[in-house]
Amino acid sequence: MSEIRASGSTSATTSVSAPVALVTGGARGIGLAIGRWFLARGYRVALLDIDEATLTRAVAEIGEAGGSDRSGRSGRLLAVHADVSDPAQVEAAVAQVDAAFGRIDALVNNAGVAVFKAIGETSFAEWRHVMATNLDGIFLCTQAVVPLMQRGGCGGAVVNIASISGLRASTMRVAYGTSKAAVIHLTRQQAVELGNAGIRVNAVAPGPVDTEMARLVHSAAIRRDYHDAIPLNRYGTPEEIAEVVGFLCSEAAAYVNGQVIAADGGFDAAGIGLPTLRGAATGAATGTTGA
Image 1: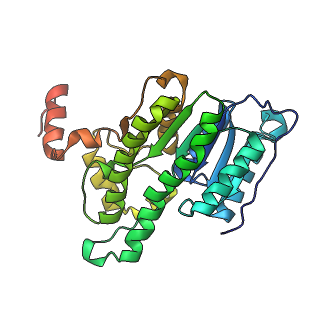
Image 2: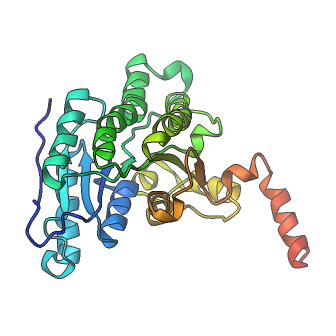
C-alpha cells in the first residue's frame, strides 16, 4: 500500500455542518473541475488521486488561485494519495476523509485509465489494469463510502463517470469501452440497492472533452472528425461536465436515480448520421444552398 498524505486540515473556522464531497481522479481534468465546482459552493472537498505529484500541484494551485484566507477554503480541502483499485488503500483513504471531515455526502467516482489498442494487441495485463481502475475502483469506493452516508441517516449522492464509449462501440476501445459499459450497469445496480438507504446513484457519460490528455492523444485530424460527428461541432469542457455532476449531487436532482446522462454535444443522438447529410439539413433549415 502506498503512503496516503493529507493537505490541509479541519479548523475552527470550518463549519462541521458543511457538506463533504469525495472526488476520485481529482488531480486534473474533469476530476479537478468537479472538485472546484464543489469548493465554489461551500463544500468541504477531498481530492483523491494515484498521482501524488500532480495532486500536490493541484491543491497548491487551488490555494494560490483562491487565497485560503479570502475564500474560506482553509481547512476545506483534503488531498488523499491512493490507488482506487487497491481495497486496503481505498478503506484507508475513506477513513482519512472521515477523520478529517466526519462525513461524506457526495462521492464522484471519476478515476479512470484508458488503453487504446486493437483487440489482438491488447494484453491481458492491460485489460485487467483498465478493469481494475475503471470498474473495480467504483465498486470499492462506493462500498467503502456507503456506511458513512448511512450513518447520519440522510443518505447521499454517488455519481459514476462513465463515457460515451460505454454507450457506443468504437474501434481501439475493447478494454476502455467495455469497462465503461460495465460502469453504466453497475450504476443501475447500485441505484436499485442503495435507494432504500436514501443514496442516489447516477452516471455521467461524457463525449469528447477538451482535457490535457485529449490534447495529447487527439491529432488535428481526429479532432476534425469528432467536430464533424458532434452536432454542436466542438469538444466539451471539464467545467461543463462538472456542472452536470454537480446537478446530480444537488437537491435539484433529489428524485433522479439510476440514470445515465450523456454530456456529449449530441454525439450519441447523432448515431451514424453522415456529416455531409447533416450539413445539407442545416443548409435547408437556414434557407441556404450550396454553390
